[in-house]
Image 1 (cartoon, protein in one colour):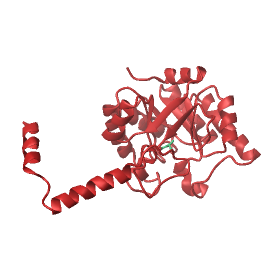
Image 2: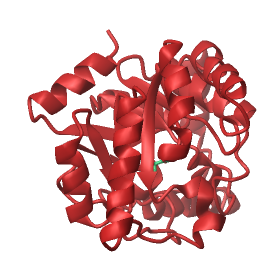
Image 3: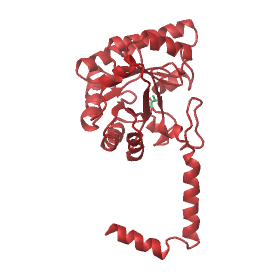
Image 4: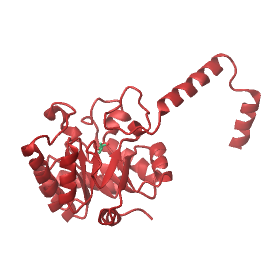
Length: 271
Ligand code: KIV
């Protein structure tokens, strides 16, 4: 049975910390499933960590649908939240609704996430009124990186912190079942978490959120040249992969792979 938004809400009420990780494909979804992670985000961060762009801006609806379908196929237990990509929900509420439908109906996600506060609250309301589960996302909103002038902490200073709280409250009021708090001072995230009855999921927002989300590739050290400050490091897999591939290349060049024994075991396994 899949985890539900109701169960995620209950976790906040029980003060149970909520774990979330991104996944984009069979490998990452299978790993999240095996680790028993209750909520998985098919993030548009795939633009950077999977597709090699320098932001999430170029990510398309078709791309999100394909990656979401891969994740829902390979992770049958967690609640799957899929990102609505840049400009797929700002043009009109109708477009937001039909794009959310694609992520739920073609991709198999249980919820969608979109970025922004007060200005997108009417769209969140339209979606939730139509039966779509929505996760909000405030603070640093990566799709607006060019407008925000880079990857910068948000909510610094009294006015900015108050605006951030107002944004989060507007999303809750519009029916969001949870809100991501990205790149903001810990005290601001703590206040928002205290004021909201729905769970907050932090990334670069300190320890006092109801849960934490991390990008799969950051967590596992899969990209050696990219390491955001807020990324937890629970592995250094780039090193392991590089070493294995170099050994393979050396063995092929040195005529040490395949050996007779390996050729035989492969052809036997395939029978
Ligand atoms: O796309 C993503 O991975 C995200 C997280 C950073 C929250 O939105």
